[in-house]
Image 1 (cartoon, rainbow, N blue to C red):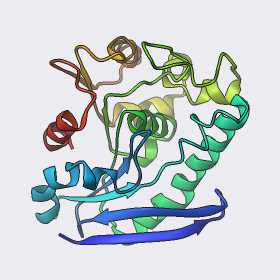
Image 2 (cartoon, rainbow, N blue to C red; image 1 turned 90 degrees about the vertical axis):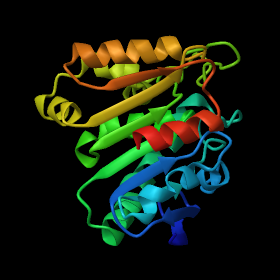
Image 3 (tube, rainbow, N blue to C red; image 1 turned 60 degrees about the vertical axis):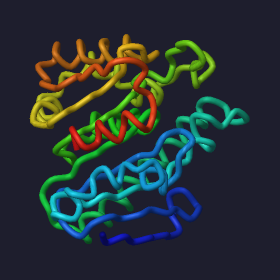
Length: 242
C-alpha cells in the first residue's frame, strides 16, 4: 500500500501541520481524527487496514489530517469566542490548503469526508457548511451540538453563545437554512451517520436526522447495538460505509 507523510507550515494556523496519505487512486477521503487522536490515529486503530482492500484496488485514497482540539474546543484557558475563532482558522486550513492539495494529487471527482467522535462533528460541520465540495459524508459516533451536555460530555463553550457558534452548530443553523443552492447540494450528497443504541449522543443524532428529513435531505442513520463509541465498532463501520 502506498503511504506518504506530508508536513508543511500553515500560514493560516501559524504552525506546522502533518498528514498521511494512503493509496494512489480512487475517491478521495478526508478523515478527521477523534479528540485524542492525531493524523496517524486511523492507522494505529486499524481503520486503514479495514479499508486496505479498497485502497489496494484503487477505489479509495485516504487523507488523514491532524486536528487541533487542544487549541480550539478543549483549550480551557481560551475564551469561548477565541475557541470558535481558532476552529474557524482550522477550517480555513482545510478549505484552502488540504483540499487543494488533495485535488492536486488526485483528480477523481468524488471527495468523501469522514470522522469519528469529535472528528464526526468536524466532518459533518464542514460538509453542511460547504456541501458543494463533497459528494459523501460518513460520520460515526458524533455529537453535532457542542453546546449540548450529556453524561460526562460538557458544554464546550461554558454557556457562551455567539454568531460563530451558531453557524458552526449543525442542529442550530440547519433548521433556518433556506438557500435553494445550498439545500440542493445537501440533497445531492450521500450521507451516512452511525451511533450506538446506548451511546450518549443517540438523541442528538435523532434530532439531526429529524432536521435533515424536514429539509428533504435524504440520509441513512444506522443504530448499532450497545455502546458503539469505540475503535472496534469504527473498523466495522468504515468497511461497511466508506
